[in-house]
Image 1 (cartoon, one colour):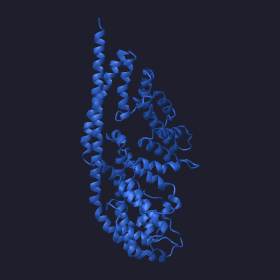
Image 2 (spheres, helix red, strand yellow):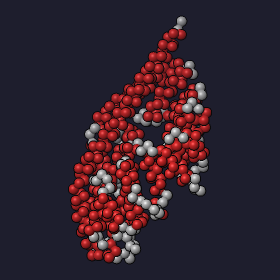
Image 3 (cartoon, helix red, strand yellow):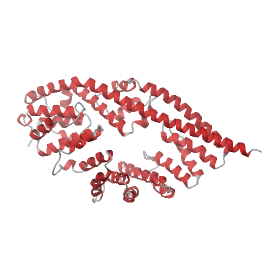
Image 4 (tube, one colour):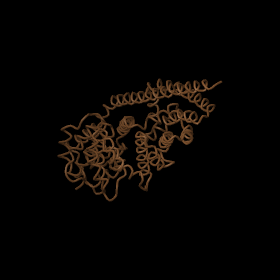
Length: 451
């Protein structure tokens, strides 16, 4: 049975706004107009979907439930609620995501069969329901072909739920396993780093070193592993090796929390090695660097509180470039880039920015609906004319709501970034004060030894 136009448009909007794949919107060449009638139920379904997925309505409504149940096939119904749930999850609206996924009962469509339980587990983990998440993930990790993502999340869920021995077992298995892709390697590295920090907290430095030395030297988590390895060497009273690890990290950007922490560790290691002249020099260099960074951060925080820095990047971005990578490229040559590089990797900020970008993409699509139809593979001939006219009326109503929604989301995003920078400032202040105190201790020690 051919898909209804409403179903095609649902996934078409998702695909063109990077929330679904092109496979979901393929239209067969022999589709007839009778199979794609855009009746009242269909346009209500599309309208409800767009309102929900773009945050123009807070929770799945009874109307949407009615339209999906009466308009779509059982398989389409399940996939519609799955993608709606995933959309809510990406926006950070976890109760709404759970409510959407709760509509899915019985046998799952093949193309969401693997991802569905992983999404459920993710939602449970971010809501602190670790036992329930572990119960879902455990059987997945015991399948013939283990899913590294499921293994990692299971290990974390077990540790958080207090089942440390089993959690360590799962993470050790993942951290020691061979990898066949960059994604699998990154998850293996994250498992080993999680183990490393956990062992450090327990005072088991040797085990921490074993785990941390399994991480990739060139992966995205290499610096975090090297920082932890320095602390493991420090715990085992090897200040020379600790210093060697931390010195490597001083080559990084001063806006990085990893570089900032390493900067405070290097003079401590030199002090323990009794290289007092070098220790004093590095203490003073660290204090100067922290003061300079605090001054720069104050300027950046003042600048962040205006939204111009982000709206300028949006205004210079084409309709196909509303994604994190392209926006970052627009910002990469600004004074903000070192700070944003760190904070935009955090989940709340990623979610807020993704939602804002989705609204930008939607605005771009609504500005030229004919381009959207081309992207969906719809030929605008007489057989589609009635459907397109009805949809255009819905899109006009949606377009009227966008300015208010965009302004609200941009304000929220700016607030999140400002709060994150304030936390960076507090941590920098802690590093500065503790480094000044350590230098004073060293000078007192040297003074007491003078004849």
